[in-house]
Amino acid sequence: MNRQEMFMEKAIQLAKENVDTGHGGPFGAIVIKDGEVIGRGCNEVTASNDPTAHAEVQAIREACQHLESFQLTGCEIYTSCEPCPMCIGAIYWARPDAVYYACTKEEAAAIGFDDQFIYEELTLPIHERSIEMKKLPLDYRKAPFDSWAASTKKTTY
Image (cartoon, rainbow, N blue to C red; front, side):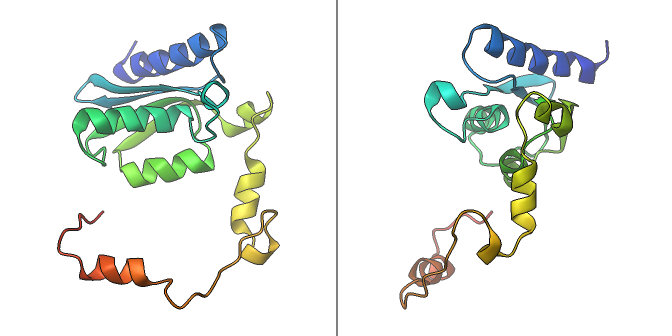
């Protein structure tokens, strides 16, 4: 078994244990840095009543706390399934070097985890989306942006 297969086996095992214990969905993820696991996550959406508690997000949070950084430069993520749109966003913000996955989004859809509607919603103009999204053009709307632009205390990312 090569290095990548070994790490993928760990992510898959996390996912299976999560299902077997009744804790959540069939998804697991780990973050690797320098050959060591620094973050683990399982799908805990229903256990925590948190729609953002996906395996990849949980693993990213743990790894970032371990590194005391908001970025995962030099890291790899191994996940039992191709990441959903939310997790893809989190992954890009975290900036790991690579992501490896086992099952595809089509395989996830076949067991009831279908994110295709989100991909489709993202391509629609805002006014055509199924959840209303409407800009409120308030005079003071840019105050936080102005403060950020003028700040000498900010950490850019």
